[in-house]
Length: 275
Image (cartoon, rainbow, N blue to C red; front, side, top):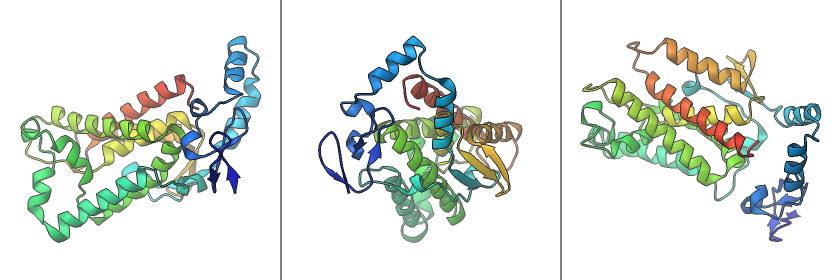
């Protein structure tokens, strides 16, 4: 068992800072949350152009060499993820979001019935008279398959992203992507009585943000074709763009809006030192 170099707390699964090489607990894992002796030196060297870009790239690629297995569509992936995806703490939000969606699903289909689902689905025609549905539709799912695959993807990709950027930033991106997906569906389908439900827009945001921050993570499309995560993200976005407007009961507009939010958030975080 290791000890946090900042607070001294015993830590079963410590985080090692890549700048100062010390071990920390979940609360102090980020350089800005502990007295990092190496971060300022690293920034100074970067400003002076003294870092070795080749060595830095190799180190980053070695760190990101985990493999995630996925079939062709993000929202219906079966993912066997990296070990870090399963390392969660009591404060992690992703398991709580998954548990909440499962609880809501039980209410939908086993306790309160269809009336409950209709009350919280996002209908474009009623969106602005029932604004809460812009949030609540993210917690609803159409069937057990829809719920399972969405939650499985969220658990794997979401845990990795939350570890990298912290819980507060993660939930902000998750909600912004989900809200943007819902608004995109409403704006592009004005007056439509067809409802939207599911966390796919928010999950696309998580996927897009992680693709920017960890572009060299490898995914296997249909368990066969290896692809860098950033390339897979653009591929999925292109597929949604090509299928936009198809009568297939898939929220392509929500997916595209969500992943664009994820890309933007990832770029912002990358530019501000989250790598």
